Image (tube, rainbow, N blue to C red; front, side, top):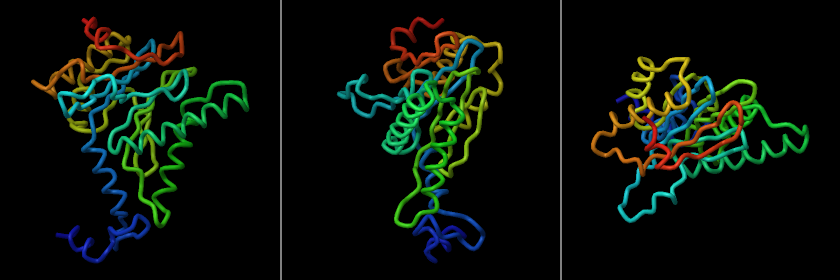
Length: 236
């Protein structure tokens, strides 16, 4: 009822108008959009970091390989999005430009935290600009510099660092399982095995290896590598 009153008073018409109780309703709606997006997970392991995401193939005639849920930002950084995926693509493209500018300017790869902060600055900017809407997407960003890092960016422009986490559909259920089963001594195979186990459980009869997108960044190589369905099928 309270939310309906806010809507009737027009507090959800723009992202720059606070409601009387101090809320930005358009930004809150953007966060709800993320909850409806496709499931994605990230896990930090002792020998690298991994990302795994559900492609959510909606039609039988869609070619699975044409759907890219996990994308490289630089050789040592990758990202996946949940929410409005086109918003995520734009932010990933911006991140790629940032990474290349850093290489040209400093002759070294950008560290993951700096990239995340820059992307979050852009997301925050769009929560306070008239005539624009917030980015309706969360990004799960994984990278390897001196450490193996995993960050989540929020539509509000804030970010958190995790050892393992999930975004999108059924994220709360997945986080609960990660809290119980994640171990800091995991290697990448252990992490992939756990991620696939969790996806099998939450997706049930809809689970299909063809609808899974996955990538790893190994600590010794610092190179983003996509995994095929055959690669995932070999995980025991």
